[in-house]
Image (tube, rainbow, N blue to C red; front, side, top):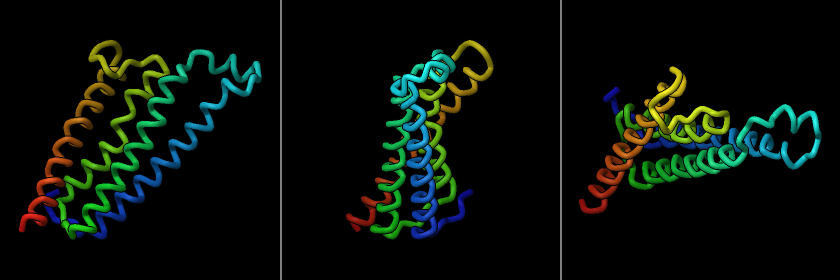
Length: 150
């Protein structure tokens, strides 16, 4: 996991992942139209879903896609080779960071360590995503700063 990944390859993976996140968020956005359709059976079937929390997840995945795009731009513009773990951390964080909001829409509060195993697992995985994104962005900023400052 410490083997370096060249800037172009890492950027391609980040841009692909970000594009998939935009696609997923678009699908989620279409699903969020259900309450506005006023089709009784559909509205009744989705009555237990918190669509405001889905909106949070929808927007978060869009922002995380942009984050992956910015990371890709940094890699290419600064010609930064990065370790594989850093690439994996950025992609993992770009997907997992919004999952607690998504699960909350379905009654699972992944912001609290408690309840059933799915809630505890989601809490831990979400916490890991915050941690790895913070570390990854610190390393990226350090590497880019090193290039700028020579």
